[in-house]
Image (cartoon, rainbow, N blue to C red; front, side):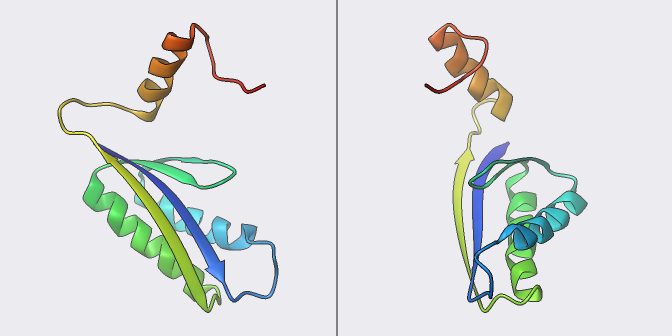
Amino acid sequence: MAIVELSIVPIGVESTSLSSYVAGAIRVLEKTGLKYELTAMGTIISGDLDGILKAIRQMHESCFDAGAKRVLTQIRIDDRRDRKGSTEQKIRSVQEKLGRDRITGG
């Protein structure tokens, strides 16, 4: 299973607000059935790598469909094949080492 962190930034749009483009890309992602987590700075998707990459391409294209003149997409892939894992397991592992129930800042 792969975990992918993704950030899509439409460039050449009229507003500094990008939330409508993000919402459009998330609508595309929701149609795939892949598990995802929207964060303030990007989106984390987990599942089959081929399916994720196909979804990313569709999400990228959705920004052009919405009128963007240029789109910058950054992708980080964690593709672990020695055992199954999840985003929750990764977080839990760090929490255990910190001796906490959840991660907080400050």
